[in-house]
Image (cartoon, rainbow, N blue to C red; front, side, top):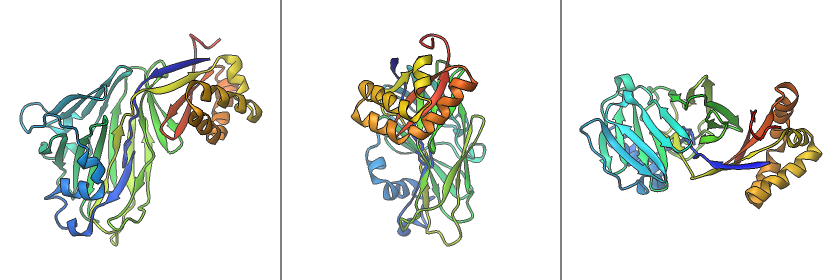
Length: 309
C-alpha cells in the first residue's frame, strides 16, 4: 500500500461545494445592484474572509494571486474562465452566461462580480483559506435555473464521482481538486431542491426555485481547496481484500493508519460504495483501487502500473 499526498480540494457550492443560499429578503430588490451585499447576507463568513489580494477592473486579469499554494486567476473578461494551478495539475473553470455577461467589477479585495444581464450575477470570492466560491446571485424567478461550468482538466485527467460530489484527478489518478455536494437555501433559510448534472467535463447545477421562492437566492459553487489531500493506493491483493465487507474492516484500518482515526471512520461510512467500485475495478477492469480521501467523503478510482502488482 502506498500513501500519496497531493492535490487540493475544490468545493463548488451551487459548486463544485455547489450550494445555494438565500440572502435576506431586504436585498430582494437590490441584489443585482449590490451583489456583494447579497453574498455577505447569505454567507457572511465567505465575504468577510476574502483574501486581501490585488483586485482591479483594467488589464487582462482582475485577480492574479497565489493563495494557499494554488495560483488563482480571475479574468476581466468572463469568457476567459477562472484558472487554478497547483502542483498536481491545472484546472480552468468557465463561468455561466459568460458570452453575455459584463466585464468584472471589483467589489472589494478578493471579490469581483459579473452581471449576466439575465437576472443573475456571478460573484467569485477568493478567500484567505485558499478557497474560491463562485456565487450566483439569483434575483428573481425569471432568472435561469441552470448554471453550467465547463471544466478543462489536466491532460489525461478525469472526473470521479464521490457521494454527491466529485474528485478531479490527473493522469496518475491523484486528486487535483474536490467538488463538494450541491446545496441550496432560499432567503428564509428553507432548503431549495438542487442537483448536479455531469456530461463529460461539463458540470451543471440545477436550482429548482419557484415563483414563490424568497429571493434573492445565492448559489455558491465553491471551488475550495483544503491543502493536501491523501490518497491510498492498494496493490492487487489489497484491492481483492477490499471487495468484501469483512475485508473492508482491514482496509479501513489501513486508511486510519495513513490518515487518522477520522479517516478510518470515514472509510467505514463509505464502505458500501467502496466495495461496489472495488469489485468493478478488480474483477472487470483487472486493475487496482486507489482511495481518494476528501472532506467528508472517500472516492474510489482504478489505476494500473507502478504499485499495482
